[in-house]
Amino acid sequence: MSLETYKPGSYPNLPPPLGTVGVSGWVRNNLFSSISNSLLTILSVTLLYYLIFGIVDWFLLDAVFDANSKIECRKINDGACWAVVSRRIGQFVYGFYPEAERWRIDITFYAMFFAFAPLLYPDVPKRKYLLWFSGIYPILAYLFINGGYFGLTKIEYSLFGGFMLTVIIGVTGIVCSLPIGILLALGRQSKLTVVRTLCVCFIEFMRGVPLITLLFVASSMLNYFMPPGTNFSILVRVIIMFTFFSAAYIAEVIRGGIQAIPKGQYEAADALGLNYWQKTRFITLPQAMKISIPGIVNTFIGLYKDTTLVVVIGLLDPLGIARASLADTKWNGLSIEVYIFVALFFFVSCLAMSRYSLWLENKLNTDHK
Image 1 (cartoon, helix red, strand yellow):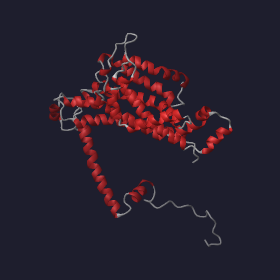
Image 2: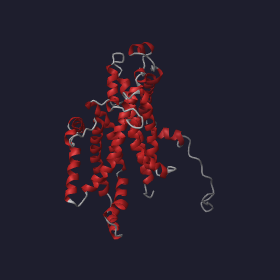
Image 3: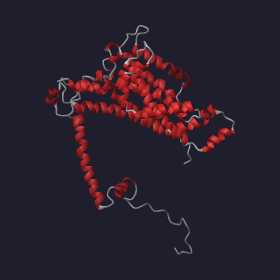
């Protein structure tokens, strides 16, 4: 066909050459595009092969899940001795909470998901009714866990421990620190000198003092600052310190979000005749919270992991239970298994918070793509 008679579309489109698209094309372009890349790929695959299969063998295939001691574990197989966890799983989860009363912890834990559902997912069915349950859940949780009411046995705080203690401190600190942090952020931006000064002093003090120092203060000195006759349990004092410490960091995160709002938003609010609280509720605070989601969740994750510091003041969190388990001569020397188990718990919990943060960011994203 000559150029004069050629018309676009006269010939069908030919498929791309074999090996340039699809999985084979990706592998060729990214893993074997040159001699050096090919050598690195082969080396990496070899190392991963030995590493992954070695871990799987030790972690699962050669592991021992039921034994009475470390010596018995080693007689059965040479993999991980998970018997130290399975034999003490009750202590890892509930601490020294009485076994006959642990059903109260289970009910409270599962009910927590129903209480948080309408707060975390606005589209959840029956949200209006669930919000009522969310409002009364803290009271119900306190009554169930603490007891002393409606025929429930009173449980001393000294018996709390394990993952239960971590969840109680972490969730309570997260829930309480967010509204306090919002108020501190607004107070630091306030034009009232007294309010601004108090908020700045509080924030700077909490951010400038190590958390472990605050925990020692909570365990030994906090009652001295209370009215005569006031006596808070050690757990309540620790939760107060965790809440205040986290609130100071959240206040700074939210303040950064407020400062990132364009000036035109304030001018538009003033043009509509909105007062300060209307402007804050409908204009500035929602946008600041949206901008600050990554920082807020990052602070929450840090708070949740920092709950392990309570072991220094005598509370048996999962690390405290782990140390107590390793002190037993039957399980002495199994620190790797114990600490991996605790690490997996924190990893799963923090990963869930991180994934929710990403979901919420995407849901609230209004940028044009």
